[in-house]
Length: 247
Image 1 (cartoon, rainbow, N blue to C red):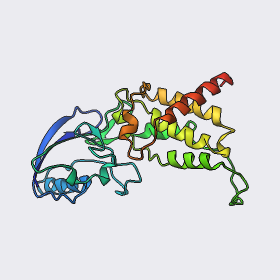
Image 2: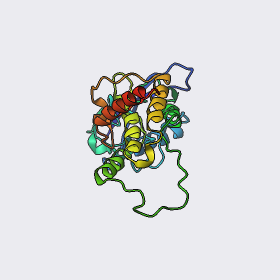
Image 3: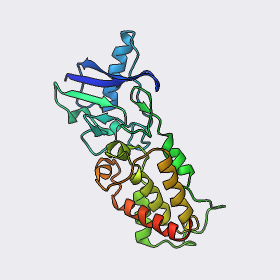
C-alpha cells in the first residue's frame, strides 16, 4: 500500500520546526508503525537525506519510549503503544500526520523525539519507597489485602510513555502521577512517606509546567495500559489529607 506521511521535522530545540511531506510506497499491512518509519528512513538515507529521529527501545509495548501523535491521537487510532500499532489500521492512499508529544513540559529534542525528563524528576521528588528491604522476606510476613494488591498491580502497569499528557488539552500529568501515588499508597511499605510523597510529586509536577486536571478524561482514553481515571481522585484525596497533616 501507499501512504503520504506529513512529519514534523525540527533539527534541535532552538530551531523552528515545520511539517514535511513524504510519499511512501510498498508498505505492508503487517508492518508495525515504527517498522514503516524504518523503511522511510532507509529511503531517506539512500537519498543522502537526514533520517527522521524518533524514540523506540523494546518495541514490545513495555518501555513507553515510542510516543507519537498520529493524526492528532496519542499513539494513533488504537489503544496501544505506537510500536504495537500496525499499518493494517490504515488504508491504501491514507495521509498520516505524525507529530511529537504536544506539551510544554516535553520540549522537542529533534524531530519526533521529546525530553520526558520531567517524569523522572517527579519520581525523584517522591515516587519511591525509602525502605531497606534487606534479604527476601517471608512470603506472608507483610500481609496485603487481595483487593489492595490487585489495584496496586493494575496501576503499576503505567509505563510512563506520556500519552496522558499529550492527549490532555491542559497538558496535565495527573494520570501518571495518580498511578504512582495509588500504586505505592496501596502497599504497607508506602505508608510512612505517603504524605510527603504526594506533596513532593505535586509540587514538582507544577514546577515542570504541566497543566491542571479538569477531569476531561482524554488521558485515560489514550492510555495504552488503561490506567483508570479514579487514580486522580486518589491523588486528590491523598493531597488533601497531607495538607491537613501540615505538609
